[in-house]
Length: 69
Image (cartoon, rainbow, N blue to C red; front, side, top):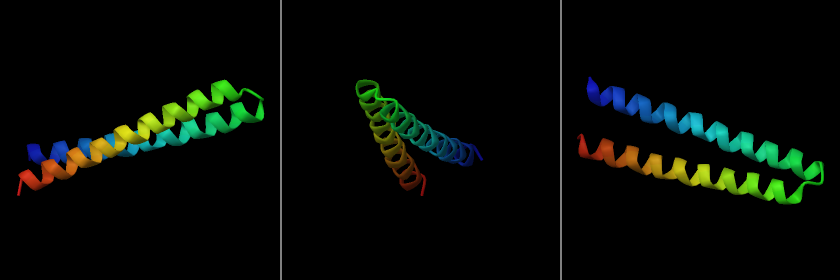
């Protein structure tokens, strides 16, 4: 049962952070429209950082699943 809870938590965390990345992209687009290029670029960087974190979490989940077989 504990293994199931960990997978559920990982899935939730991945999904949650994917939405953050989308929010950061939307914010970057709004900043660009407002002429705030520097701020927009930082928001894009933040989105990339979150996307990288999500990829690492996905890898961690797969390793965890593999090791629990």
